[in-house]
Length: 345
Ligand code: GLY
Image (cartoon, rainbow, N blue to C red; front, side, top):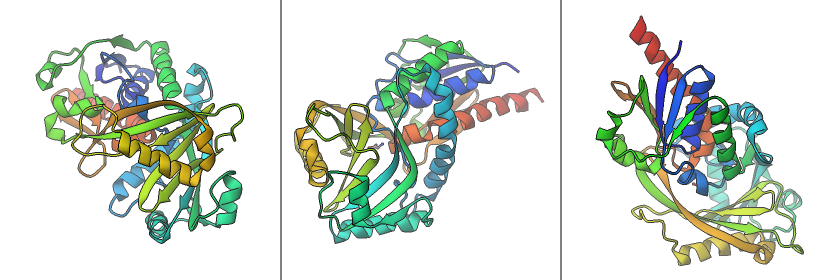
């Protein structure tokens, strides 16, 4: 059964949807003026449903755990198209600096409720897992099954994998909801990240800005951690995600700021927090600071749903686009192909 599909948006989610549909026999075109220039470009790359767990976010948690279960196969199938290892580290170590931070860590542990996947760690064990970490840590935890990936390498691999399956790319803007009607295909899927707000205003996707810093290890520096380090530092959060040659430090978070200018004060605070737990990062070379817009929904759960007629949505992934890409690809492809079965029966 063949279907012709237009995917609007060429970020990690859009390309995963396109690739999944193409592998299932559909003829797919991705429309995006600058594929991969949105949130996928800035992402830290944490595939981390346990670390993101929080009371009230059970649906997001379940979806994230399901997607983590798909990630090994997803990464294995994509690796031949990648120009380096996609998975850059395994395991997350959490560090909590004060009593309040330790209480927050306990809240995450309680939300997960399974010490096999998120467990307390003695500070001495955390110090062994993260050489060079600051000694004054109130509490620690580990999520050994989480991974991290290089977001930019992942996007390049997805483009190559899509091309190998015959996915076509059109470098064009789609100018608002009305323009969706003019796109060809049996189905049109909106995977446009923060731009989904204009294409499908009824979804309630809003941009939540974040800044992320990239640092490179200098010749005399300690190596990057071999695990992702997530720290709570006197009420603020910071993550340090390993890359082959350095780390990604993230992320600020702002509502109601839609431009991509970098605000220096919050970025300095972010780096201060990273240095508080990993002092050796002070010696790293500064590479870049970039801002992006997380496409966020009211409940933090993505919208993978028909929008009426031949238009569908797979968007609104907030902080978790890379984590949720495989499950979104599978569900979006099922949704579009199932619609075909229904229409033909
Ligand atoms: N993916 C983590 C963040 O949005 O900062």
